[in-house]
Length: 343
Length: 262
Image 1 (cartoon, chains in turn cyan, brown):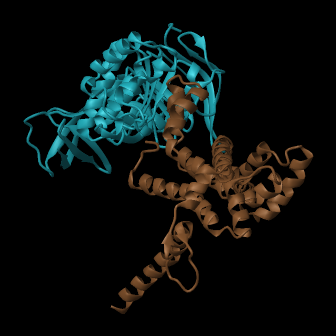
Image 2: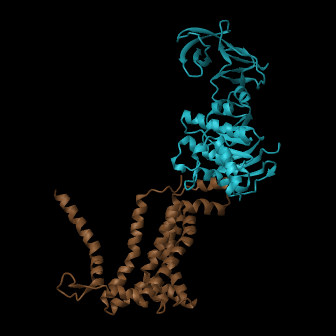
């Protein structure tokens, strides 16, 4: 692996008395961002805590910056795990909090002041050095916790749902702080999130944790367009799925007609999944459908159309005027369909 | 209206029953030629206070009590903290059994505890020594301390310790740089509790200390028995001082909210 990153090989970790995580392996290169997504209880936090040495778990290898750390206690792993709620030390000022990792490493004097000053400046905490943590706003607390986490420049940073329970303004503020951290000294960063859009925006790769296993790890574009299993496709809640039949020649036949498939499955009943923008309204589309509902969002307005019992959500181009009951024609982008055998 | 009168009467009775013994003590300590049926002393004198400050007997006993109280308070913290913390980490029946064991020296009648300890301490050569009395006082004090810290750590957010470890602090650094500063107030309370357990202790001091170890309660007891009422009342008032100070400190602490963990 590249020196400076994180390697986890065949990690197992229990959830209480349940089997828990099984055979988890992944790598994160220095300066890379890996987002872990999964349903509640999938084991995301358990995984981070096991890697950080704070929770139970065994692995064939856990390497940090090329060094085996699986048998080391948490404080010697070179991994900082940031919990969802920023846990600042209430008996210390903001600057003393940020200096904490340096002081416990025996660093004193001007080196501490310089490092703390630099990181606090980068995270816009400059004027808050002498403040008590209780007087900080939510965003300031998150930024202070981030500053404290990175001041000793750990090779690996684990963020457990750093944006959960934040309002949109605060979420933006903390997200920007994470970007600053990442651009500042480029640690291998693993972050857990429930928000797929957030994962897609922030991460270089996304790992999907399902039923205690890492079902797929892929760049956002590949994951969102090419889920490798029905479970992942369902977890991603791709907006459009259509039942049909996988034909012997590998194509897929459904209410959308016969569609070519890049990675055909075995013939038989199947389900096709399409990314949000793979089905479009086009004047000369091959399939007729009826608009049943319009959905307005800040980013994109979509129309829900019906083809018999099947409902599809398709994007609306700017300026297109539609209303429920209108008939439209649909076209499917070639190669955008993922087909899996029906369960 | 009747309810209000009843409440006021109850409060008055409570105040009277709480204050009366101490008012009488104060009067006894300075009263002179005070005989029945006089409601108040006809004359006042500070002689007993001068005797207390000048005489070695009460002053020495006060010093011994202070040393024992401070030592017992320290032991209640040093031993009670790890025991209480360990108990707080147990779950289910283990915690119940552990708490019951910690409660045993607290719940046992002092005379029974003192008798048991006396036999053991005499064999260990600790009978009649200050160290023996200190250890004897520490037994119930550590019980109180353990139960107190069990309550403290039952609500202590241990994630903050994990945070510290993840940031590079060893368990020892985490304890001294994070946990101890966060439980300063409970530590002070436990010290005060241990101090008070020792300060007012009579059976354990009598049986384990025998004659040589003379504490203030022992001297007050002796003064009462020998009929030196004014000096006994003065010594009893000195005995009251730490309790009143502890009560005031508790009330003061209660009026200030301190964040123990995030």
